Length: 495
Image (cartoon, rainbow, N blue to C red; front, side):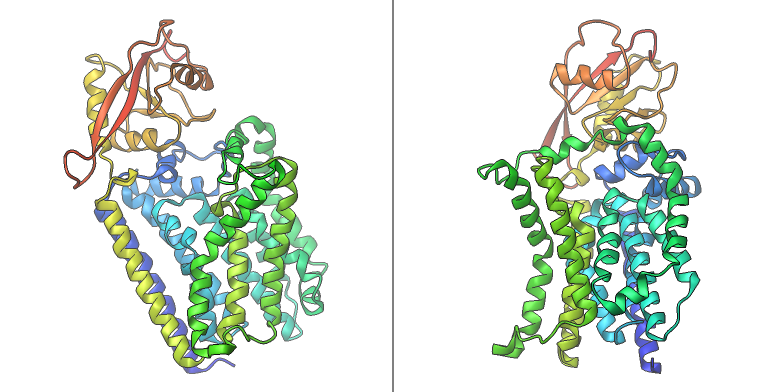
């Protein structure tokens, strides 16, 4: 039974979350700065509404395109949907867990997201599609919690099956790795009688039908554009720090090291919180059902993906690809440890989380303003240099690079230019007569980049490569970055 104090605590926590993400939105808008690769991608691809945009599933592009339609192609239009989704991630997670746990414990479990740098730092700094995935993971968890709450009361509601179908369907078009969250949880629920009775019911057919209906058209686009959808699969085979191991083990070792790196802040925090227990620090007692379910689900997911990692010879597995499993493991650990903490230790954990959140705000502001990082590089200088090299009266050029960073940022600064993705796709104006290839100095790679978009250079020889020396915001003048570029006239316009 929730008390009046529980309601006050819940409202206060939700207000703090709303304030935090509102501050992040305002800071991002006011401080400006260059857009990181994932954000820059939005200026390249999220200009219209399509079933597919290349190797990424489309939901975040749709939300970003809507934001551009409402607010124009601005920094605010980039920051707003991201922070709305991040707020929804925390709020839906909290609303779910407070149905199953005491409110103060539910708050701490929700704050475990803050202890995953791939969410609290990278998500805020440069995330896009993964942010939509987080929100739908939280929505899925919320429906799971509602279903468990109803089952404990002997109730079963068809509305939960409908909501779960919507969450799974939308989650499936956020990122492919979204499925690492719900599928292991549903699979391992079968090993716990109480969970099996709550989840494995006939109304899952309704869930599956709704999810399939939402997924049908986007997945159909992926099937019919398989080459475009798989155009970034080469990232799975980058060199690894474990190249000295036998080939089948390289990817597994990389995956396990990334899991540890992704969870290390959370693990250290839990150890520090348990230090006052002295010799009984690790005497946590039997894990509650919720914890066992989460932990078994996370470990099962890791075991399952080990087989394709070995079988396909994958050498590089990034922590950000494992975020759904990291979340499950974080929830499992926190739901085990948090109930063992005294009220004083819980208060200390809340204070620590508040300090960490403030530190993230300050560090994020510092990153936008200073430092020789890509988000403080002065791309306006590059745009001006390219303009000076264009013939007088030339039509707006297209821009392409090895990723979205330069094309997206140049598109933001010069809206009339055409920004093309590094992979096949994008819309090319029929009267396009010049393309600028930025950041690539290898002639063979430049030629391949043109061929990616079926563009023919006017002359067999590409011409001389130029170099732009770019400064950084608020850095000493001697701190610069050299960026190669080449302006290539096209044969008979775009084709």
